[in-house]
Length: 138
Image 1 (tube, rainbow, N blue to C red):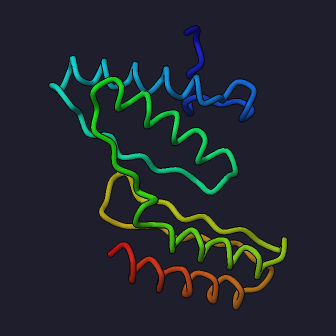
Image 2 (image 1 turned 90 degrees about the vertical axis):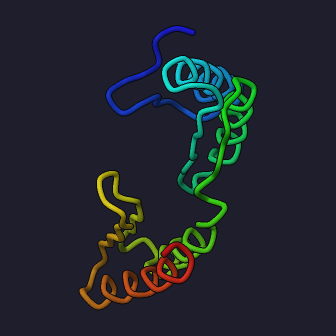
Image 3 (image 1 turned 120 degrees about the vertical axis):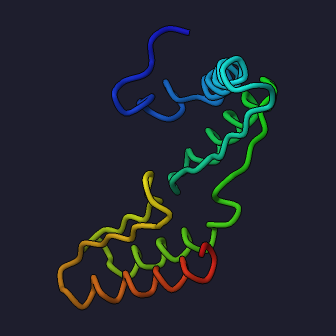
């Protein structure tokens, strides 16, 4: 397969280096390696952002994981409403800010961060997204 992993995982342009075929290979390899270390049918939970390439790469990764004997769950099944809220708030900011929502790797919590041109915009965007997170994910 070659060397693809950097300090932040695999990076590249979707459709060029990051293809469904590569995702299948990575998924299958991950399932086989984890099965050897943790036992048969390890569980993988897939989370992704809302970029256009996300569904393509998630489908490839899922295919590879399941063909390697793993079980797969998607965080996005439950989080679709959260991503819709992030998209809505991003449109509301109209290029004057940004929003990041991510789960903590060390604690049972979801982090909501925003940057905008005014404090009121930040507070409003965060409050609206937190309300959706609490409704769907907590």
